[in-house]
Amino acid sequence: MYKNLLFEAKGNIAIVTINRPDKLNALNADTLNDIKDAFLNIKNDQNVFCAIITGSGEKAFVAGADISEINKLDVLGAKEFSEKGQEIFNLIENLNKPVIAAVNGYALGGGCELALACHIRLASENAKFAQPEINLGIIPGYGGTQRLARLINTGRAAEMILTGTTIDASEAYRIGLANKVYPQNELMKNAEAMASAIASKGQTAVRHSLKAVQSANEVSLHEGLKFEASLFALCCGTEDAKEGTNAFLEKRKPVFINK
Ligand code: COA
Image 1: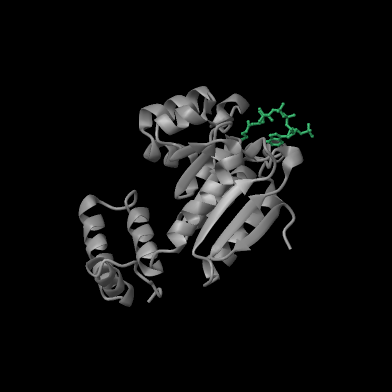
Image 2: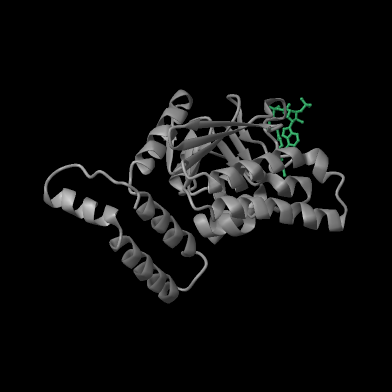
């Protein structure tokens, strides 16, 4: 079904593995189409509560957009190329379920941008992050200029984008680009544990938490707080909210039914 992607369902978790290891999982058109299909399926699958995206092999998460495709672009084609990648990464960022990037090696260019579109970034000790497009005479085109500046800060984003410098996992952690860093052979175990923890919560609260956080970069504080209050109210009307608060008061573990 997919050309360059592996898809695995483990309980309520979907694991998406970009599978083009001979090209360090570089994102060509087929791979982007696969990613789009996979996340549309995840979006619509009632049984998936949380997703993980990673790269196959031990070397790369994604080493960027496919440079051989960029090399052939004219101006109009380049705009479409950028907009297509942006649309797919927007799909991930705005998904109705949390997406964890398990960054298992190079996350360069489009790979860093893919990680940025995810909600949580976990890295292996050998992970390397960069926006090296400047070295190719171009700029990031899949959201890097915008998401990196928002996630870390404009000064650090400007430095990474203008110099193309590669940073290692510990530096990525220090500046808030990676949430956590693990030895490579423990990365997926920890990503799955985090995904399982999220999947064990009441899913209405998970979705509303995500929606509220997703809005934080889009709206004013005033609007965001109004949105938060509405979602808080919706949560309080659920059976899970009664169960969660009752369970705390009765000193027992909650049993959520996602209603
Ligand atoms: N696009 C297309 N192909 C890529 C690629 C990319 N972004 N990144 C790696 N590849 C390919 C290489 O061309 C090579 O293919 P080949 O075996 O057919 O020649 C294969 O993947 C392995 O890469 P190689 O460069 O031999 O591995 P390395 O260990 O020596 O170097 C990197 C690894 C990541 C440092 C190097 O591949 C690199 O700099 N890649 C480009 C990174 C980049 O600029 N990304 C942003 C693109 S916008």
